[in-house]
Image (cartoon, rainbow, N blue to C red):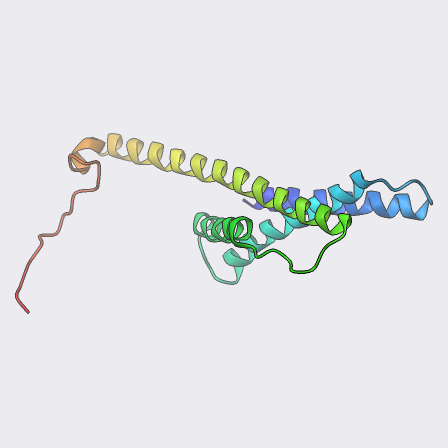
Length: 155
């Protein structure tokens, strides 16, 4: 996760530097570097939200990813449209922001799937080393078997 955050920050800084270079040199500024800057800044913001959840809220990385993914999905599906007509530039910025949210969801989905696969492999390895099988540790539905008896009482 830290690598992804660093990569997003680097990409955002590089895109902003490209726009600054074009402006300082009075070179032609096209929509591509502007779009790339808006896109990378928005993507960086999603990753920074994950970092904040880990550092300030003391969440595990996978929990932080899931929380921010939820926010990104809500952003993509529940955003209320503007009542004021926007310019083409406003539309382009909104498009870049939505594209960044979609990319964040794709990347984090892959990271979470890799994390789950590593976790499953670790469980299988530990179960094999202990002389137990994973099937013995789980019930017929695949859920972990409880090692504590269930007591029912009338209240």
